[in-house]
Length: 203
Image 1: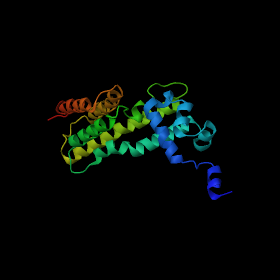
Image 2: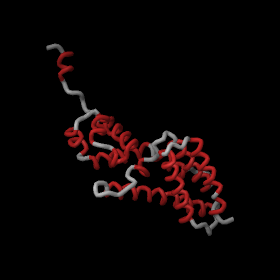
Image 3: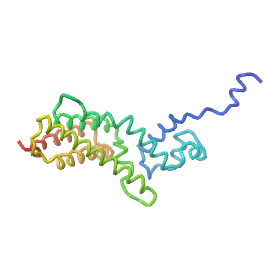
Image 4: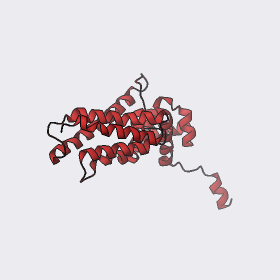
């Protein structure tokens, strides 16, 4: 038997990273509940036993896909909050505009839309996503605190209310994108949200 024939007879090497990326794309399109096992195995190019052997179960696969999404897509939005030498207002605006650019693909954010309703089958995933969304608000609060310390925000600013408002705008951009809003419309929402800044922050 020739070397070529031997190579043809060998099973194709399983690329776990590629399969995980493909699973992430399915979850982005369909959410946790809407992504069937058939959808996932077809996109990943494997059968169900291989999926279970490599990832354990659908929930475990989703958690890995979510971590991949957060590590690759999330930083581009939330890293804007950590940019130095800008005001808290500029940091929040940069965060929203980066989200509007990224969500303009029509799929929105997996952390926001991955499991919008709690069910008996997705309860653990639902709580995980809830906690992650809460962490986003914590990061915004921390950036506002930095703004007070730096002097570009008044000490009397209700950072809890401001953080909650802009977290709501951030998550709303994702939903608007999923509903088909074009990037220009998303940017217009950011314009309106930033006009609200002066009403939220005392002079």
